[in-house]
Every structure is written in C-alpha cells, then in structure tokens.
Amino acid sequence: MRHPKGMTLAELLAALAIASALMVAALTTTTGVSRSVLAVQKLQDRASLEAGLRGLLEADVSHAYGYRTTEKGIGLQTLARLDQKGLELEHIDSTVTYEVRKVDRESWLVRTQLSQANQPATELVCRGVRAIRLEGDSDPGPQGNWQRIPPAPVIALDFEPTQQGTLRLPFRTRW
Image (cartoon, rainbow, N blue to C red; front, side, top):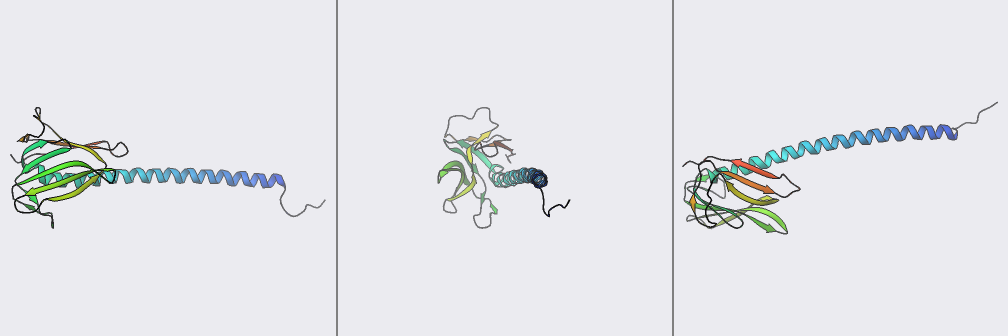
C-alpha cells in the first residue's frame, strides 16, 4: 500500500507539541536571564547613587560646624562651599540646605548653597527622596535652631517605596 506524501494529523500535532515545549523552555530561560540582568543593574544603580550622594554630602558635612532641622530637610553651616562651575571646594563660610521638594509631582532632593561670595545656587540632586535627616545627635533641639553638629553624624535618606528604602551615610566632621 502506498502512503501519500505529507504528514498525518497525529504527526503534525506531535511536531506542534515539541515546538511549543521548546518555545516555553526558551522563553523561561530568557525571562530568567533578563531578571538577573535587571537585578545586577539595580545593584549597580544603587552603588552609583550612593557614591554620588556620599561625594556631594561629604564636601558639606565634613566641613560643617552647625546644623538645624527644617520642616523639609536639614541646613548646614559650613566653612567650605562647592564652586558651581568645577565643583571644587573653596574655603568660604556658607550655608547649605538639603530639602525635599515636589517638582512636576515627583519628590526631589534639592541642594541650595548660600555664601557671601556668590548668588544662591540651587540644584536638583536626586529624584525619589521622601525625607532627609541627620542622625547621631541624642538631643536635636527645637526645629529651626542652629546647634553644633555631632562629630559622627549620619545622614539618612528615605526613598520612595518603589526605590531603595532608606540609605544611611555615616560621616566624620573636622571639628
């Protein structure tokens, strides 16, 4: 008996089942790899964010001799300021304020620097920050009053829930 050329329905269904199983396996592997890549990318972003914030805050906190808490953040009295063009440190008495503000319905950490030498300079530092506070002083005193900064302050940044949680950056002052 002669067999017609082509495939039977059973052979076609078997080929489709094998192809489907291979596609599911490939999709599962691809999804797992992309999740791993995203996890590594988040860790790198967090490390980059932490390094950038640490560098900026280090310049202000390490030269600070006084601080005060405000409704939206903290203020620092420092003996140095960052030059706005080259971001080089200049030894000029300055006041630096870090506050959380809404910009286009998003929370941003905003840095404002005041000194006698220049006009006030305000810059957006980091998106997604809900709060900034100085930890390490057992008696922070009333809000708005200037007081001596503790020798080992910790700057705590609370991020939006969809981001990093809380980041604590320890510093040493020069005083």
